[in-house]
Length: 284
Image 1: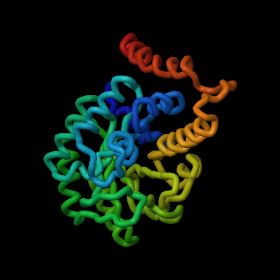
Image 2: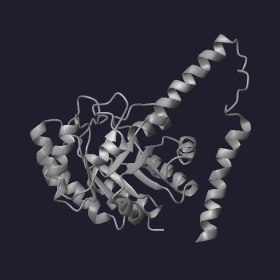
Image 3: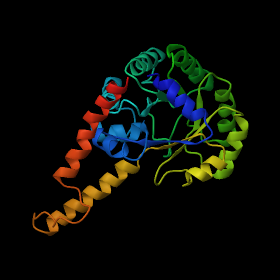
Image 4: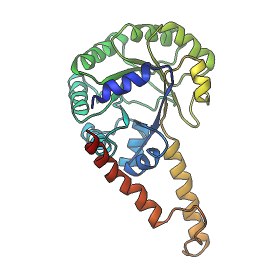
């Protein structure tokens, strides 16, 4: 299966492509019940694998290994991976891209931040000189074969956002992402500036960007919507609530209720990851 071409076809179709942020194999198993596309965000990965904010701690072999586990369990899903700044230098970025494409990743996002990096929706971001980033992006584009490449800028100054959006649209990147965009008006302007190049929008709870539905994003000319952290934040809230209740009840588990998850429901979810792979192989 040509995973890059499959994602590219979806991006270029008339319907918007939603990709759900997953941070471990279990969250991906839940997401797979509802959506056919995953996004591995640096925020979620750093939180899940290291218990740290995504400010430069991710080691690229860890990200590659996680992508490989995802692809084995979910052979038919779109899989877009955030590789931050390509792990600093051109050579590493290209090596990671080749590794990810070899194991079946659908696409990557590479940004123009410099270290120490920050989440795209917080203050304090610093960006590389445009020409330096374009050199790295060009190297990555030359290294890929079929992989979808999303060019991302973290510029915050309006004039610089527009300058970089125009520059990214002129490259061979498949998609453009302006992270932390703050208004619908800004989305409209960026859409006009980049012409026919597909546009990706990233929204995160408590972030800089407005909360918009898929129909609203479609009307604004957005082609791909990534949801970086809804599962991560929901897990944090639910686990906190469950443990507070457990303490309040002196360690007694709650009474089973209709629709609650127990052993049987959890095993059924996980067994799908085995049968799904077998079904793909049988139909090949």
